[in-house]
Length: 366
Image 1 (tube, one colour):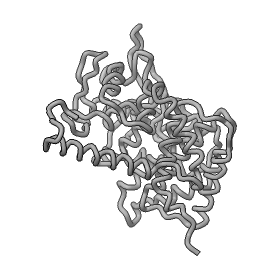
Image 2 (cartoon, one colour):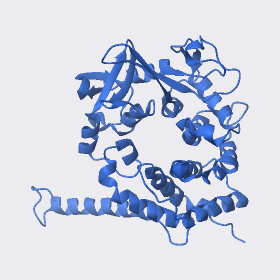
Image 3 (cartoon, one colour):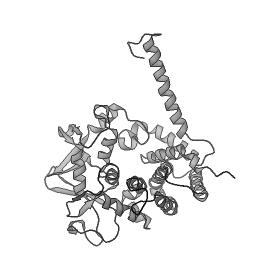
Image 4 (cartoon, one colour):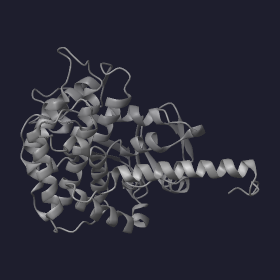
């Protein structure tokens, strides 16, 4: 209660009513996604939620993962972003911290756009963020444009430096070549995955057909990069090759976002059920893997399943529901390996999404 609201006053009654509304809404949301006894995946969700609570304080150091599970307090956001550091090379900008550049190109830009609230509104690319470590205010659009110059399509048989403007003849998954000037002098060129920026292109690019030329001379557009990713996802690859590029674990969410930008019918339409069929046929079997990659693969598979279930365009047959439920039951029974590390945040997010859509996985009435 605020210091100015006297007990029994109208202000006090209004404040009490507002608190009751907020608490009721929070309770309803918790009930929607809470583990339900006997429901496939419920046992695993209970374990994951318990582990996340035990690690909440430690996870604040990795706020993008923390935000998958917990709401971000203003003080936590300010403390985290105060450590961000920009590195430059001409027009190119790379985001990171004093410890190094970001692990996933575009991930910190996506984090700022999702969580920064200038003037209590959603952030836009035109907004200028204060980077305390650099003592400068920089438009988020400058980071976006820099990523446009740094993203590229690999060309099989050629090194990155030898691409010389060529485009691949077969579908490829985009990569990013982060480029910045080191404090000791000289230019550093560091490869990175591209999924965070691909999703930003799918969701924020106003004109998917708008073209630009990257640092390697390739003519690119959001449409080209995302169409290549769509075709690439449909091909079967070796699991070890996929783990070499973290983007593979996020392609369902990226491509669902892309498909929503395309026409709903006709030759240009993209059917999200294609993603579902490929996920069920290829991704779920690949979660039966060794301990060292189990948490990485299973957590992201649960999140991908959650994205598919949330999409109203995706239909689920009785056999597909049975396959998913059997998979979730197997995960419930698995006691090893133990859940550990910040990647468990993907378990929690994915299982909450699945729990909120559990009616779609219910067995059909006889």
